[in-house]
Image (cartoon, rainbow, N blue to C red):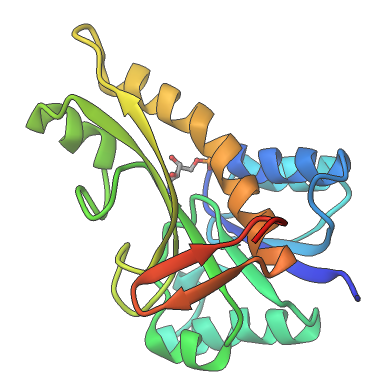
Length: 206
Ligand code: GRF
């Protein structure tokens, strides 16, 4: 079977992108990564992509007169590179139903909270302030509703008495780096089925 083409969308540090690239280099992920696109030209993750010889693009919404045209540019890239799967790895823009209507493959997102708790921005800070004893991260399918698509996988991280937003975020991020490549592998291999809101994941034995 032909290798799947995976595009990674970023906006910042790119540590999740790096985790994916490393897993691919170890042959854990069997896919092509034709490009990485960033919504910001100063995203550190762009250099990570370049260091791994991946083509990069910067597509900043401010350079477009409408969200429609901005998303058309992203769609044009996915078509040009025959992308099968998109991974949002710290991508800070919201994609509309227009984008999802035209890109029909799976779009994965990693979120630093145990969804449906704490969707949106500053999830780790809000979890800490709320006083939860367990925080975590979620990999889910992207749908029209922000951070509300069917859930592939979650990891639970205990909150300690002396945690700050930074220390908790760091521990969550370490797990994100494991969870996101694991889910991407499942999606690349097609070992899942969506039943309503539920994602059924199959291993090789069932
Ligand atoms: C991660 O915490 C991710 O969950 C959130 O943004 C952060 C991105 O980090 N959506 P990085 O750019 O992958 O280092």
